[in-house]
Length: 97
Image (cartoon, rainbow, N blue to C red; front, side, top):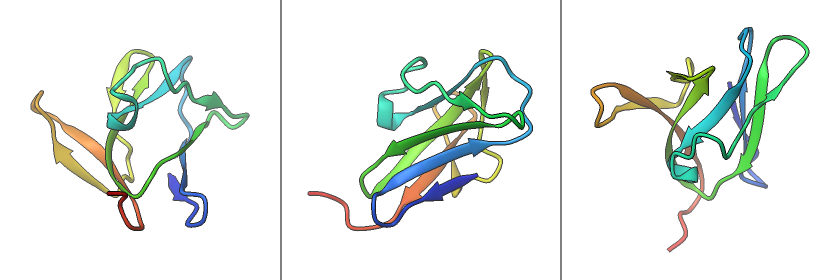
């Protein structure tokens, strides 16, 4: 699930019922760095990470125990250069110039 705070532009990424050892949020907002945004494991086998993003569209994926995974309910999906798809989150508002 993706929740966006309209005031703060903080984006809350949450995965539920995911039995994993390590999960990272990876996307164009962190230069696809596979270690920069480790998600926090929740008590219910869920995972969570919050990041502040300016208005715009951002491609991302989850790296779950070394395996790439799209968000099951992303705002949309776009083709990537590897023949697959990336998830997209849309942060509303006016883009900075």
